[in-house]
Each structure stands twice: as C-alpha cells, then as structure tokens.
Length: 92
Image (cartoon, rainbow, N blue to C red; front, top):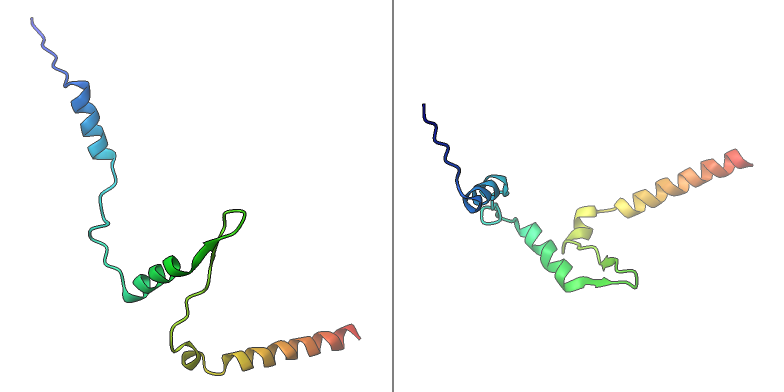
C-alpha cells in the first residue's frame, strides 16, 4: 500500500490565507452624499489641533440653518427660564 501526501508551498498557503481573511475593498463601491462630501471638505478646511493633540473643528452649519430652525432658540430660552423660575420657587 502506497500513500502520497502533497502539501502546497508555504508561500501559496499564506497567500490563500490572506486572500480569505482580508476585508473586501468597498471603498470603490461607496458613493458619498453631497452632505458627506461637504462635511469632509469642511473638516479639512477648518480643523486644528490643540497642545494635547485633540482635534478642534468648527461645527458645519447649512447655509439656510436659521431658516430651518425658525424660532427654536427663543422657545428653548423661554422653556429654560421657566424651569429656572420653578426651581427658584422650590428653593425659596
């Protein structure tokens, strides 16, 4: 009785391993929305780093943000002041 065992070379085995374990390249398939592109460009134009290495970035705002928000700031301030008034009544 004869038995023949054939093993592939180490190079071929490693190559096959990395092909199986590597992540697929989705970067070619990803399409970014206009908003994502705007945010990335905004980051590149407006970031800086502080002494500790943290990133500091100004928040991106849409051009018509005030029109979209309407009177939300006034409403928020009115509600906050109402809460402070209730707290002051409880404390006194």
